[in-house]
Amino acid sequence: MVEDKEERLEGDTGRTDSGRVAISGDAEVAAYLKIAEERRGEQSPAEVERPVADREAVIVVDFGSQYSWLIARRVRECKVYCEVIPHDAPWERVAPLNPKGFILSGGPGGVYEADAPLAPAYVYESRLPVLGICYGIHLLAHQLGGKVVPGSKREYGLAILHQSEMNTPLFAGLPSDLPVWMSHGDRIEEMPPGFVSLAYTENCPIAAMGNDQGFIGVQFHPEVAHTPQGKAMLQNFLYRICGCSGTWTAGSFVNESTQRIKEQVGSGRVICALSGGVDSAVTATLVNKAIGDQLTCIFVNHGLLRRQEPERTNLTFQKHLKMNLISIDASDRFLERLRGVIDPEEKRHIIGEEFVKVFEEEAGKIGRVDFLAQGTLYPDVIESAHTGNREVATIKTHHNVGGLPSIMNLALVEPLRYLFKDEVREVGLALGLPQDMVWRQPFPGPGLAIRIIGDVTRERLEILRAADWIVMNEIKKANLYRQLWQAFAVLTPVKSVGVMGDSRTYGYMVAVRAVTSDDAMTADWARLPYEVLAHISNRIVNEVPEVNRVVYDISSKPPSTIEWE
Ligand code: XMP
Image 1 (cartoon, rainbow, N blue to C red):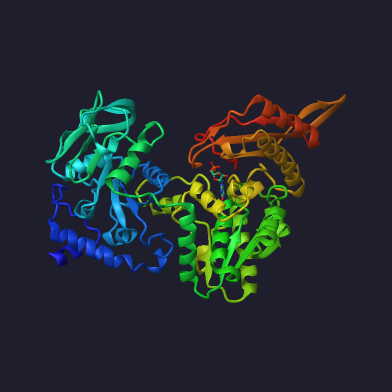
Image 2: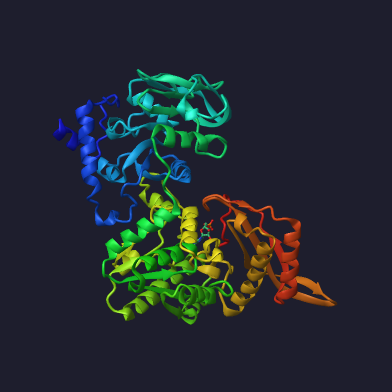
């Protein structure tokens, strides 16, 4: 039996023709657990950054839902480590994480479709608790012997959940009627053997179901903000059902991560590109904490940064954190190559290419280098892991000046690979980085070049820097900086007529952009108080002589994008 199981561990879903799985006996379960135990010690070098050890983790099995990463984020907010894995990931990938339970995500299709993705056999056979959400509850029903059918109408939006069973651990401590967010078309016609209905809504007789093995399904989405008690339900699943204790914190991450970096790097030499942003700053600080002088940071000033940014970066890393820092002012090279270029994608291409050249030249002067440290975050990992057949149109190439791996041909040190942005900030604070660096708003790699519409010249850069400085100042003064995803000025090529004193002016129009967002995928224009807008506008036209008109951008994303280019 064990040999059979070993074969099935290679990513097989354990599905039969009908898609159902058979739950195995104790001997088979023991075989799974034994292999998990063995595999925990043998990670491949590529996986070395994965935080493991004896930490508890809950795994989100992704069936293509747009909310999968959000589930992971909510779990981590409950201080339990969580990763999203593709639905066809083999047990070897999962076992080293020390899973305490699984969450099956939603998904776009129906479980009864011919090629519907199914949960791998180990989800059921490892005997760990399982929470199926939306498509996930349908999988539980379908794979364990129940029946799912297309519903006669879609249910989308808020519904009131009524509990039909008392003392359900998932709803412990919560009122018996709860607002929940629904988004589904299919429904469960027949529960699998051993399951009971735990809750219902007006349109959904089985809105939650469970069995005594710790398999639970919910039709609604506990991970979204529209389910107000959703996080409490997830916490119940993690703590009461999976038995997690919630030990995952930024401090424990720093300790484990520095240990791992030491192990990975040994006596090797590491370089890291600093951009001035929080991701590269936290990466460099972590690596520096782990291996000190073996790390050299390179900061390339491409001449497209905000006012005082180069000085602040040098001050923080060289003077305060005492790191090995090579700081290069390459503005002339970049501006020379950008002369006359007005196409946004061409700007990005030139800046990305030139950045690599400068970085390579400087790295070449250091001598032998073994590793490149970079601030890849979890959403980037999830995004690049998505191999669905969705056609994705290229809107912008998003050249990130820190993204160098394929060109440098160095082994990567990516300590933030499994963190979300807000977790990176917590780690930054735990490392003692200055608040203003930790809370810095995102800034695009190509910098101000994509906020000057048209030709990028020194003169225009100075105009934009002056206007942008005022926007930043006023936003900070109004205590709005942290509430906004980004706030900045854009220099348009439009010139218009104005009047100052008794004279006619003919000056530039500056646009102010301020947006709220969770992840930059969608964004809304910020409802800045009129007072703040008035101060910004007043100061810009008074303090920046080349500008005589200020407009506020009231477009959301989509259909606009955050940056103008
Ligand atoms: P858009 O304009 O696409 O921007 O709505 C979404 C987020 O990405 C940032 N952005 C970039 N970041 N290189 C980067 O590193 C780029 O070329 C780039 N273009 C946009 C933008 O600031 C926002 O946070």
